[in-house]
Image (cartoon, rainbow, N blue to C red; front, side, top):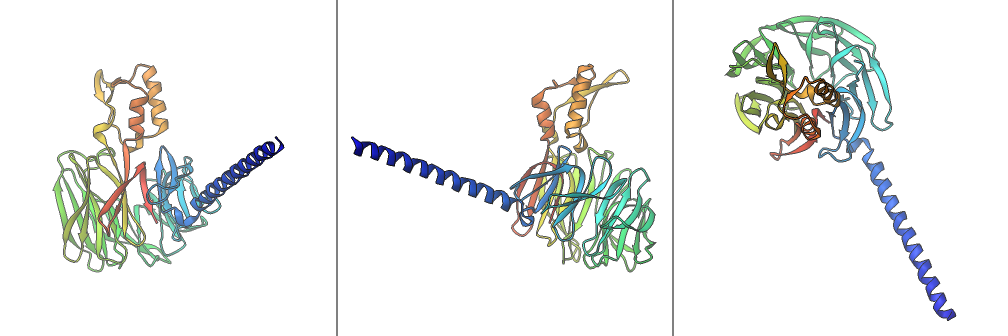
Length: 383
């Protein structure tokens, strides 16, 4: 009898020890993975989703919410990010510590210099008032009116658009000089600093143009007639030129009513090849520091709910774009729905979920020709 009791006790103790070891091992592995997921090296992508900034692995591993934000960019070392918060403050987030600090106020857009401790910021409400600051927020230069800043690789020159003109400015004086006048929309300086690839748009036509800085000569790369007017929700034509580091090649986007396409340009030969295409318009394009990956987001417009509103006594479709795919916008929709201002499809959880998930981030491996979704979100950036 005693022997039987001893065996039962031994079995109980063995079981308890086994369970303790099992849960101890599980706890160790879980925390080890959490710690590894928090290292700077594991976060290769960042993006905006539902009005907040996130960082993650290149295939959406270990997503981590940073803060309520609009637009983001990695710093030159990749150890942190700059973002604009909901008070129009430019802030810096340190990935390792998780701490944020204020850098500059009243910011609408910014561009981080890859080779120097400088940031170009466009002030909000100042018609694109462009300034150069240090990463600590100290003002270096006031360039006046300007948008779309693009840094030269060496970090002591900047190109930007002022009105209908492309300018460049060099430190330490930062006096601007005109390079081209027309209808520029967005620009990108080549890695060797000799060229600027830009798009321009008039009432009926979109062009992709290569500007030689030394001679100020231009070469038309592509041209397309655009019957409809480009808007924030339908960015038709050419846009988002981005050079691949250390090469004479660049990527750009083209949108038409059929959807969006990503193209690759060999600037030396003028040859353009297709890279990817999507069923909806593509917004934004980012390239990794070494030029082996690209990321963008597109809107699945065919899957979006079709809401309407009454304007001048007529039921009119509500046109939905990336700026509307936020929780705040949905809350406003529900309020308007309760007030009887929203018609069309029924306003419910299913449709609002479709609205929040109507934007998709795509990452492209340019060396292998493969691509994958990073999930729902906007304005991705890569290390």
